[in-house]
Length: 212
Image (cartoon, rainbow, N blue to C red; front, side):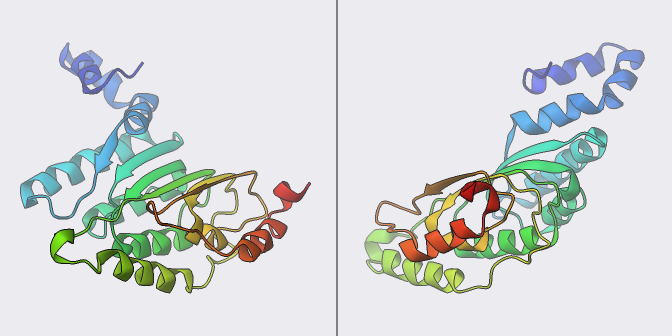
């Protein structure tokens, strides 16, 4: 039973316990599902290296267990490669992103991996940079999101088993899948009006499970 990083203490009791802990795949899978990782690429280099080693080890030792991943920021560096190497084991992905660069990186990752993903939650928390000195921040962000909304939908081969999505309304049309059973629309920020209602209805028509 995973009870935070203190659970690793069992590996320090003796060599035998350490050996058992290292090959107990469920221990590492539970550890991944209970933690929320911060993949902010602005972290100091030594912290990024430590995080990369830690996460990579947990991915490797959890195999072949299914994984649930919770993260803040979506990486576009070595951490992304470590994640994508094990993406086929991820069944649940809960990610908070902070800018459109991370959003586009996530979009690309979803296009080529996560074949067994069933649950996807995307929370968008735009961070204004000195908003008081930049009164046009919200307007600029809106135009960036409109650009993203104009991107083509994910390939039909991507996310074939996706059942539940909790995403900003502007992303729904990109995630239309026949396998979808539950949709929760999230605001991007307080002024988000979401996508056009007609487009949403069009997406529902393509979700076989929702129309039964």
